Image 1 (cartoon, rainbow, N blue to C red):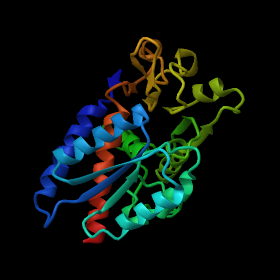
Image 2: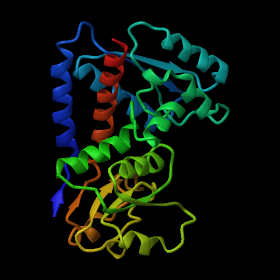
Image 3: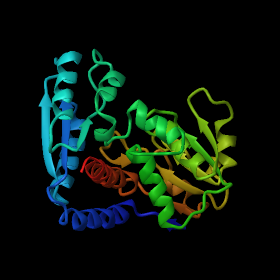
Length: 277
């Protein structure tokens, strides 16, 4: 069994980005907007801001009240759209229930949409002519590339159909000529579908959902889940101890997809910077 060390891959990617940035005429600029006081979101934003500083970016963190109106938030995004030295804009999700997340995401200029969630960027991914790609799915592809895994003709099962991971993940895999099954909470015989997979991408947000009964011998598993258990420990969507003797490769939690997502955000910001320059 091979451990796909996302932390190590991310460190290498960040080092390459830091080296490249030194040759730029100005540092790439990333603005991160946080609305309200969700503890998990605050941790994510701190980690993203820290990563930006470490690779030599200019980072602008804007913390807005949970009572901000949708119109006020979009007005702030429009200001950043016009900002000459802000190359990427990220609005930390989730947003308060009174705000339409899709409207906010689509207010960001596609060339500054470093999360890759805008309708235009998702559409380009769908047409296999991607510009800025969603961070987590792109990170998963990078992780599979690190073990030289050829996806062509492989059966990939995605457990979870969110707009952030599951759906764009399916497009990423299709674009590499994989055969894709995407499962949601209404999928029947989900265990049997997973057991037929060469690759399982677990992104359901349910701790230890995928166990040995779901996995065939020699499968590759990427565990996107990050769940906080009652004892305070982090757990993935995969029961690592249960499946480790059956799989050929697996990503851990923590230290797998999480660090990769932030590294890809930095990479996307460089892409946005170059497109604007």
